[in-house]
Image (cartoon, rainbow, N blue to C red; front, side):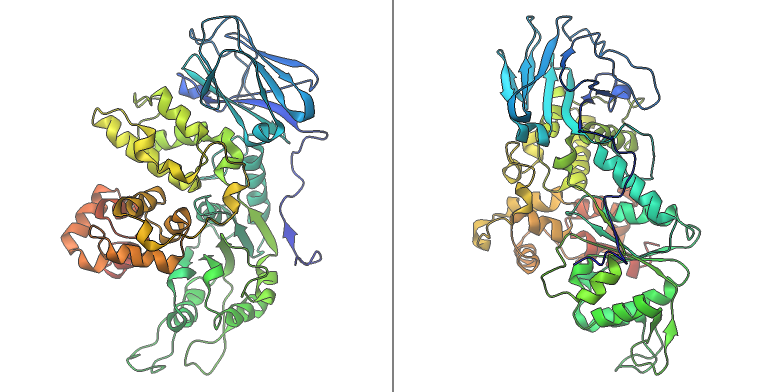
Length: 499
């Protein structure tokens, strides 16, 4: 599928470790949250790692190492030894310290196979500290990119790729499951590139039908159709000299795909109803959670889009990042290191051991609801905030890539629909994926739900009030109003409430 002469596909050579993968321990949680994300890398793959209050030394990149230091950690070491066939043997210390492996308490040595290690093993120590034992193929590196949080090798690599392509004018195709941060990556590419001073114009292709897509993208001439009293500017004209982000590109109507191919090839396009060509210098970044090969998608267009491909991994494939993502979200909410709001150990442990079908977006929304409960004086209970039927910890890392078995719509109750929407930021596509149904079926469930409203049914003052309460965050506003986020965004823009 890929044209090797004209495409650049991730992974690219970066700060990879020359040699076999390294066994690493990452601090997922610590009472001193400043220490979350610190790492220890095993210097000798034939050795044994002993974890006690004082050793090994964990550090952020470029900083001095420290032992875990917490009084609840035993001075007697827990031992992690390499076993047969790439597995590990975890032996708890001869002490009263409680030890959990993947959320289950252990009292005797436990053998972990290579598959469990590949998915990241979560060690709980003294009901206070969580560590993730995992492989890494590159050394820790501080290479910050706006919005792209993580200490995993996958996160480091994604940031390297973003910085690499940001310096070019190449079109970029972002691949990844819903909630993995494709729009965040697109905005980072724009912010780090030559066009940072120009706007990033974004459109969700899934919300454009065949009749609207061409007009939305390329504009219309006056009189192009009945009711077109004036010319309309399209997104390619709006993004001239800037960046155009085409989200959910896999849902582009078939009749528009050749038009996109032409503008990517030559920069030329024609407005609907126009009689002359126009030109746009918009840089295109596209994103999808679909496999565009082998389906009804214009393959010539795909080859133009895939000049540079970045695949954003699911959260279950970078479990070591969960802790730093939690701290980042807490900090954004004003409840971080200086905010004085602590999360219960059991809640954090459950977060670390969950497979997050909705990925980073779902994690952020669950934590947001947990913070609301904590601020109200209630202890957040993980199982009450997450539809845990969606992703058991024991599932292999590749399991979520297999389509779920379709269920009849009558099998879902109103609570199932609300939970799926909450878990996915009130995004239709993500909620449909979690329930294992099609997007049109999700719309049917929403239409039949007694508590969910269409945005146009909501009064202007209520819209204004909830948008202000949500701090301008459309997804949070959608959750407050119980209405789909994309439709709400269009309604708010139409009313001039969003820039």
